[in-house]
Length: 518
Ligand SMILES: [Zn+2]
Image (tube, rainbow, N blue to C red; front, side, top):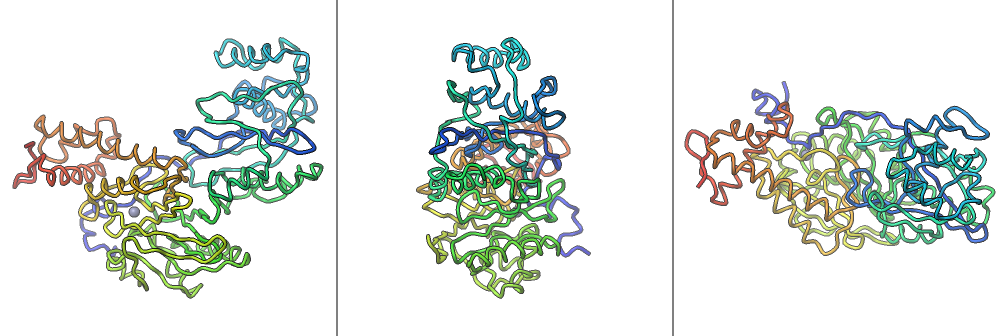
């Protein structure tokens, strides 16, 4: 028998994890260009993506994008097949995004002519093939050196198999970004880019960080650059395991029994010389071993784990905690309300209260502030690092899908209060959720959550005012835009909203369980 006390009430009562609407995604082909200039003192052209974008919003990256069906119509001198088509993709995307056309023959063209071409492509009046052919421009394989191929890890809502190419800025052209998808674009010394990241000012995905680091290390030895860029397994399509979007915050997705089709929970390893492991979530031996190996790697860098922390009680967050405690001999810590509820599976050694500071030694040292943030779960904890404005958000805010608020563990009024509490923090920059990718536009994301829930609540209130009484009737009226297969879960959220509205004196609950407007 399942160990839930209310197991006779099927599924819905037990479902209070975050839910996900995406299917496991196969990576799509994409290409990007690492464009350099000044051989004596190399600078690279990088962009900051618009914070509003779903995929890597607010991240720094290199211009590039997805393969287009017209890309295979163009010949590249010196190669064929995939090698050719991915170079075309890279050159086209770079031209669209940054305005530099990496084709032979452009030296004869005026800047005006080149920007006219870009405009006609943006307006759709000419294809990329046409703008190359009309001036006999030619893409040459040698101008674009392969610099690794990276696959987005499994936990992301959108995944790419990205070919990176190294190229040099042609004489007489200008790099100028197309705003919209991108916020800024600039030439920067790789060492300066790395320094910004180390200060916690910017966010980079693993390939960008690897490339910037390698460029910084090889600035005076450019001949070695191409080999160095492709030297690590991750640059040859191996699974990316070291995800350090901000210094000292490692995101390690592990496979968990979360709700299908979701497959992973993000475990975080945070700190300097001393570190904490937050939500070692996987109950599966092979995933626990992967995490063990990763932690061994950090230990080999003269770091040590001080403590294991659990954000909240749900099974897709606690599965590997006991194993890790046995292996490392360190305590498990959680909020009192979590400790009480999970005592039958994991014994918690130390209790964390709201506003407790977790100090971690290192250079720099770390101070993580625990925030009791109920709403999704009563004993839910977020962890806040003020200097970087970073929050480990658990299931309060997630990188993909919707957070289920399932009473009585879930409470909508508390959920709103917790979101507002995050907004009131002095510095806010990046969110590290337990599911899906990190969110580099923290404030916008939290505001969007509040706005969305408020919109839903208004619909629920309108439905009640229009005469819908029982939760299932209210769901039909208020969730018309949502797939009916999710209405069961939506009903749990609706009840949570109704409880909030009742507490605020805006609806009454009748004895038969139906609601009426006040
Ligand atoms: Zn949860």
